[in-house]
Length: 285
Image (cartoon, rainbow, N blue to C red):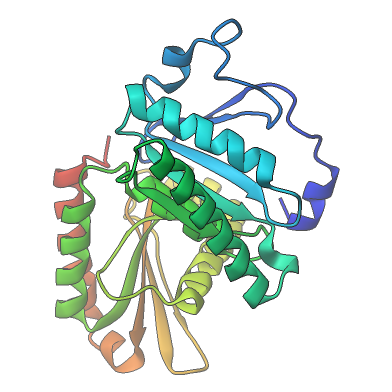
């Protein structure tokens, strides 16, 4: 939904479990901030954390955060005793109304307090990742992308495949997106430019909107049709190239216009990439 409409959402009052059916099936468990899920008389610790891949702790950067930070520290300490393999991700959230300097100061304060508390408890080597996030830009999608990528065992292989595709096709940047959530599950090894990511993410919205208008009827008529593809030429001379991998995943590439002049080569290389991806990741299932 549009960010402005979230103002009318009610606060979470109980544990809410949202199943995500996509390129891989997983659940997101949303915990109200006021619940003490470390209380053994109320909650089963092993049931909650036994099969957890990542813990995302959301801190409101515009509110007083010392108490939720203390709860985070208690949670990390408890997890490290029983399930040290869980990834700890801290979203310093609602930073859209803060200056850049204040954002960084808040993040540094949270990181320092957490590091000091863990060190005092003999936990010097715990890896905690921090992300500045907001629903009013693409930072929340970027952060969630990084969380999900750590849970994909084949991530290194996917990155290598994208590197080979880019180097042989004149592609400057390539993302493998989950269409439903706009999370990118992999990208090539070149640095992620936020502007490039945002324009690729917005491209998905365009494709989804067009598909909702025309795609359903076409799919019924042409069940054996090839995956959808699309090209958009930007005013700055760059080209966006999209290729649907399957109903869950889409490859979006950013390249210069002279590269797309050899579209036959690009199409062939993308097909090779798609075949390799399906073998490695079994995304066709």
